[in-house]
Length: 180
Image 1 (cartoon, rainbow, N blue to C red):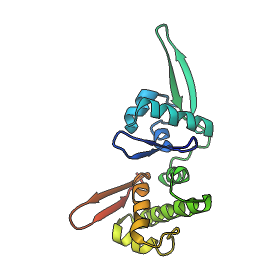
Image 2: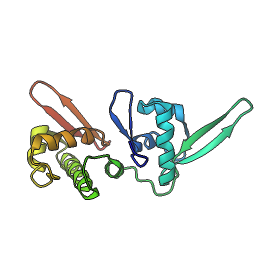
Image 3: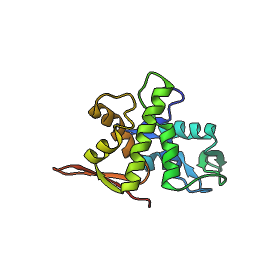
Image 4: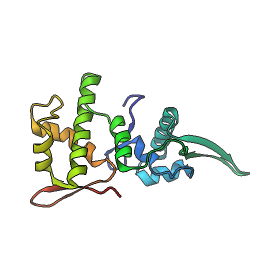
């Protein structure tokens, strides 16, 4: 992973966007590195790294607190300018997604494919993988000539977006959007 990568590997092996750490904090409410790590399911070292990156981007603030026994760091969200709608949060996550591609333009096309899939799901509120792929792939193939490879790229990224859930049974995978 590069220095600018906004993803971390969680305990279950899945990648975690930095924005998911950010979303654990209510505006103005501090959280410790340990609390954030536990909430997102990553190590404290990974949480600290993601929080530091969010501080650099201006999305998070850091403060050192001292007591007689110890000093510890708390992280908090600034009050100004933070959108809280699922769509606004999703846009921040999509912008930070690590996607494959040889050029930045190709990576942008692939983020656009994830965005288009998310928008389709938001409109439908519930759909199957088959319906989603048949509705989105042709207009947003993102350089993929094969639907299965395209879906392999979109699938895991769509699943990490706010308000998105999926259930799988013997017949199909059903995707749902809940604006919460």
